[in-house]
Each structure stands twice: as C-alpha cells, then as structure tokens.
Amino acid sequence: KRLAVFVSGGGSNFRAIHAAFADGGVHGEVAVVVSNSPSCSGVAYAQSHGIPTLTYPAPKADSAAGLTDAQLVAALTEEHQADIVILAGYLKLIPQQLVRAYKRRIVNIHPALLPSFGGKGYYGIKVHQAVVASGARFSGPTIHFVDEEYDTGPILAQAVVPVYPTDRPEQLAARVLKEEHKLYPQCVAALCEDRVTWRHDGVPIMWRAH
Ligand code: GRF
Image (cartoon, rainbow, N blue to C red; front, side, top):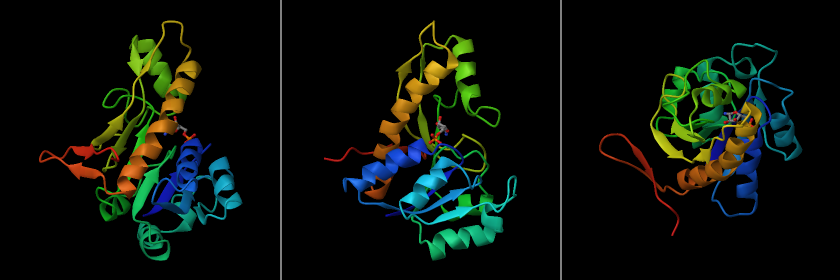
C-alpha cells in the first residue's frame, strides 16, 4: 500500500514508520510527505530519502502547497496514488473533502488516552501538562481514524504508560512518545496488510499478524 504522511514538526513518528518499512517487514511505502511547515525536520528527512514532499508555500498558508482542497485530494489520489493517509504530528485540521475521500483510510495519533485529554486545545506539551495536573495514573498514545473534528474518530489502538507523582510534563511526553514509535508502525502495518476489520457498531479491530 502507498502512504501519504502528514507532518508539522519533528516527524519522529514518520521516521519510525519509514524505518519499519525500510527493513522490508511491512508491505507499504511512503509515497509522499505533506507538511504545513516546509522547513520542519520531517520534510528534511523525506527529502534526504528521496520521498516526494508537498509543502505549504509560505508560513500560515491556508492550504498545502497553495492547493485548494480539491487539488490536494487530486494530488494524493491521482499523482501520488496514496491508499492510506497517516497524520503524524500534524497540527492543522484536515479538509473535509480529504476526510471524505479517505473514509476509513485516514488515521491520526494523539499522545493521550482519548476520549480524555483530546480536542482542539490539546496538542504538544499541553496534553501532558493536563494529564499530570489531573492526577491521572496512566497515559499513553491513541491511534484513531479521522473524522470531521479534532481527535474524535473511532479508536484503532492504544498503549498505556504509568504517570508518576514526580513526573514533569516533559518526562511524561518522552515516555508516551517512546510508545508511539512502537504502536504506530504496528497500526500502519495492519492497515497496509488489511488486518483491520470493522465491528457492527463501527469500532475498528486490528488483528495481529500470525
Ligand atoms: C507527538 O507527541 C504526537 O503524538 C503528536 O505530535 C507529537 C510529535 O510527533 N501528534 P512527531 O515527532 O512530529 O512525530
């Protein structure tokens, strides 16, 4: 399967996914990296590995590569023939047209146990500040399918890490990020290998490779 990966910053999840493909373990390839931040290290990594990139023309541009929503969808479906869209540290809302074009084929990772600590205001270190402040004893990454709002689509997978009373948000963020780098490649592999089925009530189920 061909992936379009959306990044905004470090792209560490993108790099973890790319590394999982590199060793041939997963039947998939990154066809294009899309970003609203042309100078982010996720884009630099893609370029250094010969992966096509599609970036916003200028800071705060309102659409990827100066494209309209329809043009962005066409670029992904026709030019790059992406089968699956992966949001990896992407901080802008996805155009509705793209969500509709990739129904049940677009996923996102959020660094907390949704539905807790999710939604528009919760991104980056703010998520972990809220988790530490809440006294929660566990946190962890959630991978979910994307629908029209932030962080609300059907959950595909989660992993759990402990929150210690002495934790500073940065320590929790690092603990969660480590789990993200294990969980996301597993989810992407399942999507590439058609090991995800949908329960009658719309809950996706990921089946382990035999
Ligand atoms: C991670 O915490 C991820 O959960 C969130 O963005 C942060 C940075 O991800 N979506 P990356 O290093 O850019 O992949």
